Amino acid sequence: MLLLSTGTAAGLGQVNPQFVAPTPGLDKQYGHGFPPGFPGTGESADGMPCPEAGSSRDGIGLAVMLTAPPEATGFSFDWDFFTSEYPEYVCSEYNDVAAVFVDGVNVMIDAQGQAINVNSSLVDNCESGNWGEPPNQTGSRTCIGTAHLQNTGYQGPPPAGFTTDVGAASGWRTSTNGNVVITPGENYTFIFAIWDSTDGIWDSIVIFDHFRWTYD
Image (cartoon, rainbow, N blue to C red; front, side, top):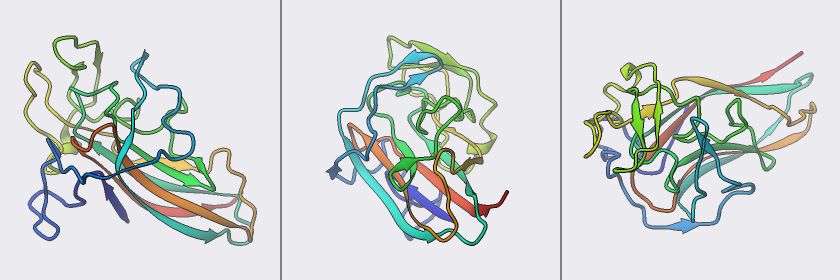
């Protein structure tokens, strides 16, 4: 299992490392370039176009090289993404992104081909309600509830101007190799990553687990 955060990779009540509430979060105060293919041409949230990020900050990742075993034709892995950017900063230039690059191709995407952030249709563990910065709340989302957020530190009272609780998560999801062709015996570089956009606050985390090779 691997946990990465734009703030602190710590659970509620943990002291070593110290848990820091994701709102306003921990600004690590460093910037870096965007990975290949980002920030992209602008994503969408609930059918509405969103602005591009101005910069990338507070990124962290783990790079590993794996050799495809004999007869392997693909791979899959499970992940769970949590963010404090719902509902106030949905569809904004501040959205944290989680990604998994395989030889430079991001395979951690939703059914619309979008990267995973608060705008993704997969991030539906939340409280239904309006989103967007006040006073111009521009959208709404129907969610499945907040049970998955309890005792994680990623659920909080509504921000000013809202009736919707802070916090959203994807729940456990599975990604595959997608369009990346896997050849037995070949080496592949995997980069598991998360980063903040435009600023370094309002944190997110992603948990990776159960990587496995697949066979036809």
